[in-house]
Image (cartoon, rainbow over all chains, first blue to last red):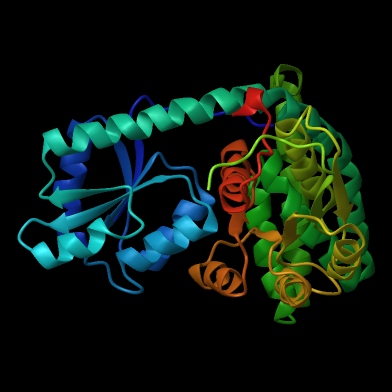
Length: 237
Length: 144
């Protein structure tokens, strides 16, 4: 598995807000020691919050699309444990009341003030510590399976090359689909993304493009495995 | 609802995913989280038709269905299961986190949605959601 990135000291925050609000929010969060990423639609907030592990999700009440309350409800019902906070306009009392009774863990008024933000950040970091304790216990479990996955990967790559060379598109599609489902869990998220692109090409009948992309991907993975073996990653995780 | 203490009643978790490594990882994580829990078994199947057969055979209370499987996809299996049983807690898993996918699964009666690649945090989160929903403890103490 590739080396784990260092865990940032501050909270990792996903902010869903219109562009007009983003500058002020970024400054306030940076002052609180948090790093943040922005999206500007509720649907995008759902997608990002479901697929990445953030410490805190801030949703502006005025989000376009399905809206902040619906996004929070979807995330809660889907099982998200990310601390989810509504950003409401100080002046809009009706908006504040509506969000106070929904699926949010807390509510913050914009413009953000340090005294409101700090307890929320502290709560998010405390939750992260609890999660990290569990994650540490599971690292050995992941490492065993990841080693096995990497050991088996050359066989899968050979099978992909054979299927591509022989024009066995059904076999190729099946192998790509299986690799898409597993690679990301073992430290190869970019392979999962590439497999998804190849699957789309196959579903559109773009077989030549898919085969070509597949062969490029195989070459790239082989180089990556070789580099990992050379730099000793194999022995360390 | 607060989870009750673990009981000695048999408990089956069904994991359906055509990607072997992904299925194996999820099953291993679930075994790890529930280590020491008596009479718990995890059944693994590799397509939607097998998932439906296994559901009929084992009556699992917790089910993980990959969205994109051969024979029957996860949502089709979910629909069928709901005609048989409205209490089983169904978790849809997928590599794609579009709001449309998530909404559709929830509307069909999924209890949770997990996006791959798996992380301990996400799996524990949905098992805790199962515990709250069904009032039954599943996680063993060292992982809580």
